[in-house]
Image (cartoon, rainbow, N blue to C red; front, top):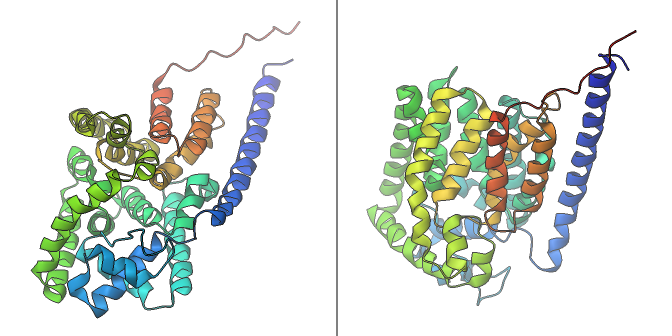
Length: 370
């Protein structure tokens, strides 16, 4: 065997294995829709849809958990509380989808948020098949906001060098919908001195907050703040929900240990994000730092939030020319199948940049030609 033939053989075998994994992921994603036997499609979108209806018709009841549940009338019955728990400013994003009949709104929501995630992924040079990873299919089935947040933040990361103000707009929109998932973005921007982007993000978030206060009153914000601890009690009072959470806080709670101990990770996470944005331009590493870091320090995040990490995982899995690729492949498989096993998916994604820093395996010795 010549010195040139072995690398070509290795490359071909890795490409073949990669496509086998992609097909497996696609099949697993399609199988996700068998959940219809246990869980009605759009159970999370229904909260957004109904909450937006309440904001338009009876805004005084926006954070009345029972009222919003009654407005839905389904999918889990009247005894399963399904509240609207997003900020009043997020209504500007949600209300357009509530103007349509439920299933039309659900279809539009999934189509547009998936398109946003795909656009952001391609902008970050992720492969198109990132959308075939099982956590993405789970988000689409539930109708969650994860693809919206993932698309906005990843898009901002991809644009911050060339279009800093546009990046700030994307970050600001994400902040009013799910602030806990962009908790580390200010640290990341400060690490690079992206003050224009940070200012634009703050201006957008503040403008939407002010506009919502003008329309629904300051009282809506006070009620939202009061609703958050009630929502926390609701979640941590349901063991089945805690078991599906993917944060260290929830894992500790599930083990009967005080979850607040997980917050001790916060300083290390903040330092890790700062160092990542100071040392590397690799957008996969940057998005893992921002999203995985947020999940490590958030009290509550369900398994569908693993989809935030899908573009970065796909970017690593596509690096078939890297001698560490087999490690990336193993970590990607663990990520894909571990979203219902506590913090497993988050740790698998975090393993990718760690593997990247390990010394590259030495090539096999080549026989000399006679």
